[in-house]
Image 1 (cartoon, one colour):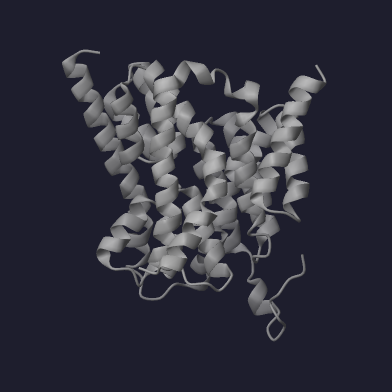
Image 2: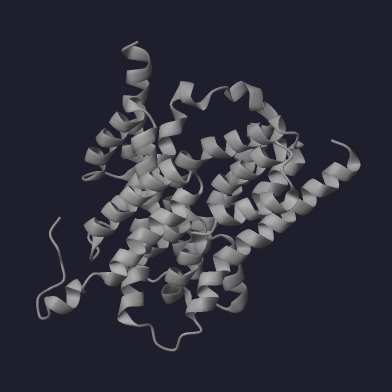
Length: 103
Length: 238
């Protein structure tokens, strides 16, 4: 990479940082314009965590391969009773067992 | 600043670090692979601070995609944060403007989810707790980026050491944390189906925004559970 290209890269990174910050402050700016939050909007906002986080889980389960899917099923069962750290450990053990022990 | 709450935040950040560190290292390694210097990689982690979008960014940069398209793609991947900042507003209204600035800069997925969980347990989302939780993760993100950039080739294939399952499982744990909320099952079902379909028909990263929108819109359309069972305790058995 020469000097000019490197400068381009720095500009791209800075623009990306500004764009990302805009997404992180944008919702707040919009919502605080409202004096009163209607019940349906409140219900929608309440659904945000489960809705967004599910989109980071479901495709990995479906398209990640059988080993990943099996690890997630076991982690799910563990997660109903135990902490996130134990879910991570259980899932990791399952995926490593499938990848190495059964090949 | 309340020291105990700050420390509690630091401690709660630990599982996040376990799940995210391999990806910080992976980002550093891939960035160097795509022509970044070690300093460039750390600079991007420090300023953008959004793992998935950073991966997309270096991939596009390595393929010599036009700058504006790289920035637009990063914006698209991070668009879900608009929902986070709208939703978290209820809990952090009391922060000063400068505190809000840092709070929003550090508003990553686990930060948002843990803040919501804390509020749900009836604990205040204080700035001390928020910052403790955020800073330990931010610091480790920079460190692991640098380690990955320096020792990139030594990590090899993350699949070979089972690192690829950690992030989905971590997010699964976060989803489970919200299972007592109103409309949990319909919201999860709608977002799961929509994100899987969008991944297939539209492609990444749009599956995040499309899937999230499906669950959120459904929640707005469903009749309110609380209103229907007025007088009954809202507590649902698990």
